[in-house]
Length: 214
Image (cartoon, rainbow, N blue to C red; front, side):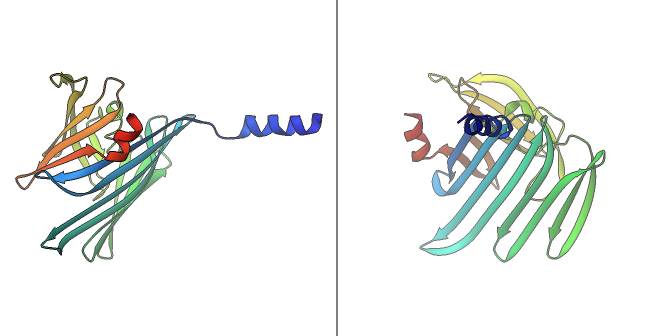
């Protein structure tokens, strides 16, 4: 019995402990019409953050497919610095692969499109597009997981409280694109708005997310 108890204690001590787990499930709207989903899972284990994101966008006209985009990405953060990223984006017949990892004192990003790979060397401790964490967005450059570019960023942390709610609005400017990000009073990410080609794009919590909250 003592041996069995000691074995359980050893497993408990050396097993990884997930201190926090958060899931974000959004429906994507373009000009108010549902076109897809954006799902992110964030697991914090000690000083590491593991992130998995899946995106699906489908646009149809009279049941005829006009556009389809999928993205699957994984990230590992260590001490709030991006340590590894892999992102695969497919739209139409084209694939775009972005991979990055720490090499000595640098972070190497490799972007592959149409069989051609480009490599970019960044300084240590880069950041990716962490909508789910306002603290990780407060930086001057952010790696775009769709194309691998390290883009100029500006995060306005001034809090705008949406009238009659406890939702807080913050603004992220990435390159020339503006994102309005929404968080509840606990800092949980609850929405996004941006525009592209004069179209309003919104992330709104899915029915599953709302049911979990209730």
